Image (cartoon, rainbow, N blue to C red; front, side):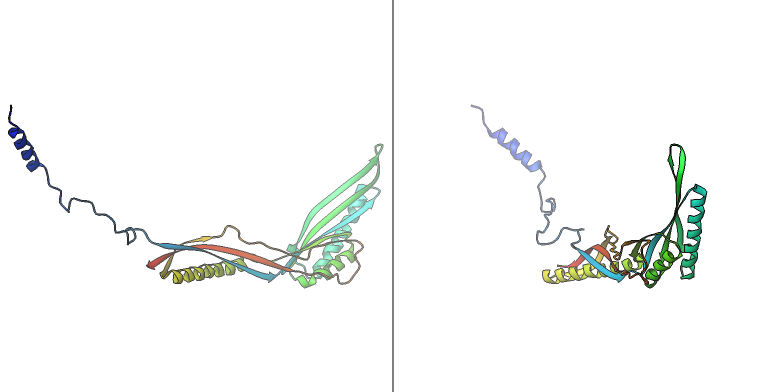
Length: 243
């Protein structure tokens, strides 16, 4: 029977030659009670704000329609009415740059190849920057020859200024929410890391719209400008300085 001693000696030699693992060679495990290195704890909140203001500008459209036997005659009468209406609007304080031609249209109606009559239409759109003058201007335009009125539509002349205010208020709202949550969680609120503006710039609700026609004879025509609301939202991610 062969002796097992040489085999045991060989195994012992290999064990002596193998490297010994030390504490320095073992990978360090993260402390589960502390946040991973390089990761900043954060809190995200969404702030919103709405500002309502009285509409300060209006648009009104006027039509001057004339019916005559021939096209040139109808067009001439329509143009004459348009000149009178524009002159009356200018006298009422409307700037020349706030009066814009919308359409000039001439339609001939025929029967068996013969022109029976023609209708000419000249329409303008007017921007009124003093909403208190809208009613009197409508009456004045009708008395000068306007045969149709469309409007008025009221709106804010500078919604961006209100939106800037709403945007700042929305940020303050987001910060107030974050501070309340951080205080409840027992942590300290840090600096903003990201600030994202809401996609929807604002919604505008201009009231006071309506229509009238050549039968309008009241003076002044009553109008109500109404109010518009501008909305803003801001999403902010804040750092948390302490746990």
